[in-house]
Image 1 (cartoon, rainbow, N blue to C red):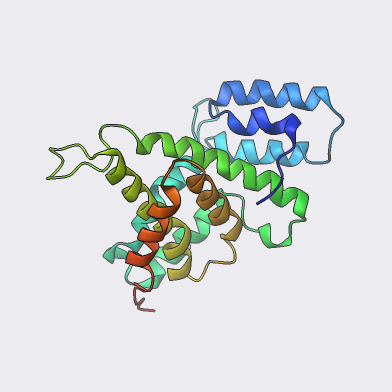
Image 2: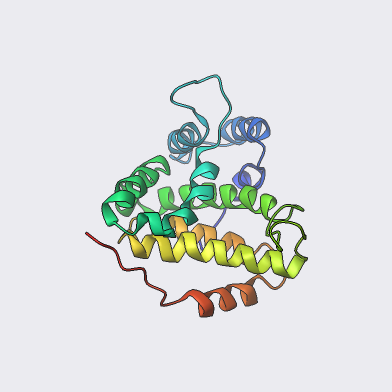
Length: 207
Protein backbone atom coordinates (compact mmCIF):
# COMPACT_ATOMS: atom_id res chain seq x y z
CA UNK A 1 0.00 0.00 0.00
CA UNK A 2 1.24 3.48 -0.85
CA UNK A 3 1.21 6.30 1.69
CA UNK A 4 -1.41 8.98 0.98
CA UNK A 5 -0.26 12.56 1.46
CA UNK A 6 -2.72 14.29 3.80
CA UNK A 7 -2.82 17.40 1.59
CA UNK A 8 -4.13 15.26 -1.27
CA UNK A 9 -6.44 13.04 0.76
CA UNK A 10 -9.65 15.04 0.03
CA UNK A 11 -8.86 14.95 -3.70
CA UNK A 12 -8.44 11.17 -3.79
CA UNK A 13 -11.46 10.52 -1.57
CA UNK A 14 -13.87 12.62 -3.65
CA UNK A 15 -15.51 10.83 -6.59
CA UNK A 16 -17.42 13.69 -8.26
CA UNK A 17 -15.36 15.12 -11.12
CA UNK A 18 -16.24 18.81 -10.64
CA UNK A 19 -15.49 18.68 -6.93
CA UNK A 20 -12.29 16.74 -7.63
CA UNK A 21 -11.15 19.44 -10.03
CA UNK A 22 -11.76 22.12 -7.38
CA UNK A 23 -9.92 20.06 -4.76
CA UNK A 24 -7.02 19.54 -7.14
CA UNK A 25 -6.67 23.28 -7.69
CA UNK A 26 -6.89 23.89 -3.94
CA UNK A 27 -4.22 21.31 -3.11
CA UNK A 28 -1.93 22.47 -5.93
CA UNK A 29 -2.16 26.10 -4.76
CA UNK A 30 -1.81 25.27 -1.09
CA UNK A 31 1.62 23.66 -1.25
CA UNK A 32 4.77 23.50 -3.32
CA UNK A 33 4.59 21.17 -6.32
CA UNK A 34 5.82 17.76 -5.25
CA UNK A 35 6.78 17.02 -8.84
CA UNK A 36 3.59 15.05 -9.50
CA UNK A 37 1.06 17.73 -10.43
CA UNK A 38 1.69 17.38 -14.17
CA UNK A 39 1.33 13.61 -13.83
CA UNK A 40 -1.92 13.97 -11.89
CA UNK A 41 -3.19 16.23 -14.68
CA UNK A 42 -2.23 13.59 -17.25
CA UNK A 43 -4.16 10.91 -15.37
CA UNK A 44 -7.23 13.12 -15.03
CA UNK A 45 -7.14 13.98 -18.73
CA UNK A 46 -6.77 10.31 -19.60
CA UNK A 47 -9.64 9.39 -17.32
CA UNK A 48 -12.14 12.14 -18.02
CA UNK A 49 -11.58 13.21 -21.65
CA UNK A 50 -13.61 11.84 -24.52
CA UNK A 51 -11.20 11.87 -27.49
CA UNK A 52 -14.15 12.17 -29.88
CA UNK A 53 -15.98 14.92 -27.99
CA UNK A 54 -13.96 16.98 -25.52
CA UNK A 55 -17.10 18.67 -24.22
CA UNK A 56 -18.77 15.44 -23.10
CA UNK A 57 -18.31 14.16 -19.56
CA UNK A 58 -16.92 10.64 -19.41
CA UNK A 59 -15.04 8.38 -17.02
CA UNK A 60 -12.85 6.10 -19.09
CA UNK A 61 -11.48 4.29 -16.05
CA UNK A 62 -14.97 3.29 -14.89
CA UNK A 63 -15.91 2.16 -18.39
CA UNK A 64 -12.88 -0.13 -18.56
CA UNK A 65 -13.56 -1.50 -15.08
CA UNK A 66 -17.10 -2.33 -16.16
CA UNK A 67 -16.05 -4.27 -19.25
CA UNK A 68 -13.01 -6.13 -17.87
CA UNK A 69 -14.88 -9.17 -16.47
CA UNK A 70 -16.37 -9.72 -19.93
CA UNK A 71 -12.99 -10.82 -21.24
CA UNK A 72 -13.49 -14.18 -19.53
CA UNK A 73 -16.47 -14.98 -21.76
CA UNK A 74 -16.30 -17.81 -24.32
CA UNK A 75 -16.22 -15.37 -27.25
CA UNK A 76 -12.62 -14.62 -26.23
CA UNK A 77 -11.54 -18.26 -26.33
CA UNK A 78 -9.33 -17.34 -29.28
CA UNK A 79 -6.55 -15.25 -27.78
CA UNK A 80 -6.22 -12.82 -30.67
CA UNK A 81 -9.83 -11.67 -30.21
CA UNK A 82 -9.13 -10.31 -26.74
CA UNK A 83 -5.46 -9.51 -26.33
CA UNK A 84 -5.47 -6.42 -28.54
CA UNK A 85 -8.45 -5.08 -26.63
CA UNK A 86 -6.77 -5.75 -23.28
CA UNK A 87 -3.69 -3.92 -24.51
CA UNK A 88 -5.96 -1.01 -25.46
CA UNK A 89 -7.42 -1.02 -21.95
CA UNK A 90 -3.93 -0.98 -20.49
CA UNK A 91 -3.20 2.07 -22.62
CA UNK A 92 -6.45 3.80 -21.64
CA UNK A 93 -5.66 3.21 -17.97
CA UNK A 94 -2.26 4.82 -18.47
CA UNK A 95 -0.38 1.63 -17.61
CA UNK A 96 1.69 1.25 -20.77
CA UNK A 97 4.98 2.23 -19.11
CA UNK A 98 3.93 1.79 -15.47
CA UNK A 99 6.66 -0.78 -14.81
CA UNK A 100 9.26 1.97 -15.26
CA UNK A 101 7.63 4.51 -12.93
CA UNK A 102 9.33 5.57 -9.72
CA UNK A 103 7.55 5.10 -6.39
CA UNK A 104 6.15 8.64 -6.39
CA UNK A 105 4.39 8.18 -9.72
CA UNK A 106 3.20 4.75 -8.77
CA UNK A 107 1.67 6.18 -5.59
CA UNK A 108 -0.17 8.93 -7.48
CA UNK A 109 -1.55 6.43 -10.01
CA UNK A 110 -2.39 3.90 -7.28
CA UNK A 111 -4.62 6.41 -5.49
CA UNK A 112 -6.26 7.48 -8.76
CA UNK A 113 -7.13 3.84 -9.48
CA UNK A 114 -8.43 3.44 -5.93
CA UNK A 115 -10.62 6.49 -6.49
CA UNK A 116 -12.07 4.86 -9.61
CA UNK A 117 -12.62 1.63 -7.69
CA UNK A 118 -14.37 3.57 -4.92
CA UNK A 119 -16.74 5.12 -7.46
CA UNK A 120 -17.36 1.75 -9.11
CA UNK A 121 -18.23 0.22 -5.74
CA UNK A 122 -21.14 2.64 -5.38
CA UNK A 123 -22.78 0.83 -8.29
CA UNK A 124 -22.49 -2.51 -6.48
CA UNK A 125 -24.89 -1.61 -3.67
CA UNK A 126 -27.92 -0.53 -5.66
CA UNK A 127 -31.17 -2.52 -5.93
CA UNK A 128 -30.43 -3.74 -9.46
CA UNK A 129 -26.99 -5.19 -8.71
CA UNK A 130 -26.67 -8.99 -8.49
CA UNK A 131 -30.37 -9.62 -9.03
CA UNK A 132 -31.38 -13.28 -9.06
CA UNK A 133 -34.21 -15.50 -10.29
CA UNK A 134 -33.87 -14.10 -13.84
CA UNK A 135 -33.70 -10.55 -12.49
CA UNK A 136 -36.96 -10.73 -10.57
CA UNK A 137 -35.57 -10.81 -7.01
CA UNK A 138 -33.13 -8.46 -5.30
CA UNK A 139 -30.08 -9.89 -3.57
CA UNK A 140 -29.35 -9.20 0.08
CA UNK A 141 -26.23 -7.32 1.19
CA UNK A 142 -24.18 -10.48 1.72
CA UNK A 143 -25.02 -11.76 -1.76
CA UNK A 144 -24.10 -8.39 -3.26
CA UNK A 145 -20.77 -8.37 -1.43
CA UNK A 146 -19.98 -11.89 -2.61
CA UNK A 147 -20.85 -10.97 -6.20
CA UNK A 148 -18.66 -7.86 -5.94
CA UNK A 149 -15.77 -9.96 -4.64
CA UNK A 150 -16.09 -12.34 -7.57
CA UNK A 151 -16.19 -9.45 -10.05
CA UNK A 152 -13.10 -7.85 -8.51
CA UNK A 153 -11.25 -11.17 -8.46
CA UNK A 154 -12.08 -11.74 -12.12
CA UNK A 155 -10.89 -8.31 -13.26
CA UNK A 156 -7.76 -8.14 -11.10
CA UNK A 157 -6.55 -11.75 -11.15
CA UNK A 158 -8.22 -13.90 -13.79
CA UNK A 159 -8.30 -11.47 -16.73
CA UNK A 160 -4.65 -10.35 -16.35
CA UNK A 161 -3.59 -13.99 -15.96
CA UNK A 162 -5.61 -15.14 -18.96
CA UNK A 163 -3.93 -12.65 -21.29
CA UNK A 164 -0.46 -12.74 -19.75
CA UNK A 165 -0.73 -9.13 -18.53
CA UNK A 166 -0.32 -9.61 -14.77
CA UNK A 167 2.84 -7.49 -14.57
CA UNK A 168 1.47 -4.68 -16.73
CA UNK A 169 -1.75 -4.49 -14.69
CA UNK A 170 -0.21 -5.12 -11.27
CA UNK A 171 -0.52 -1.53 -9.98
CA UNK A 172 -4.13 -1.19 -11.11
CA UNK A 173 -5.05 -4.65 -9.82
CA UNK A 174 -3.49 -3.98 -6.42
CA UNK A 175 -5.35 -0.68 -6.07
CA UNK A 176 -8.65 -2.30 -7.03
CA UNK A 177 -8.21 -5.12 -4.54
CA UNK A 178 -7.13 -2.79 -1.73
CA UNK A 179 -10.14 -0.53 -2.23
CA UNK A 180 -12.49 -3.51 -2.20
CA UNK A 181 -10.88 -4.86 0.98
CA UNK A 182 -11.43 -1.54 2.75
CA UNK A 183 -14.96 -1.06 1.47
CA UNK A 184 -17.05 -3.14 3.84
CA UNK A 185 -17.06 -5.35 6.88
CA UNK A 186 -16.73 -8.89 5.61
CA UNK A 187 -14.92 -7.90 2.41
CA UNK A 188 -11.85 -9.98 3.29
CA UNK A 189 -13.95 -13.08 3.90
CA UNK A 190 -15.84 -12.53 0.65
CA UNK A 191 -12.53 -12.22 -1.22
CA UNK A 192 -11.20 -15.45 0.29
CA UNK A 193 -14.42 -17.23 -0.69
CA UNK A 194 -14.25 -15.85 -4.25
CA UNK A 195 -10.61 -16.86 -4.55
CA UNK A 196 -11.34 -20.38 -3.32
CA UNK A 197 -14.16 -20.75 -5.82
CA UNK A 198 -12.38 -19.26 -8.82
CA UNK A 199 -8.67 -19.88 -8.29
CA UNK A 200 -7.20 -22.30 -10.76
CA UNK A 201 -10.05 -21.97 -13.24
CA UNK A 202 -7.73 -21.30 -16.13
CA UNK A 203 -9.35 -20.79 -19.50
CA UNK A 204 -7.45 -22.42 -22.34
CA UNK A 205 -6.73 -19.98 -25.12
CA UNK A 206 -6.46 -20.93 -28.76
CA UNK A 207 -3.68 -19.07 -30.54
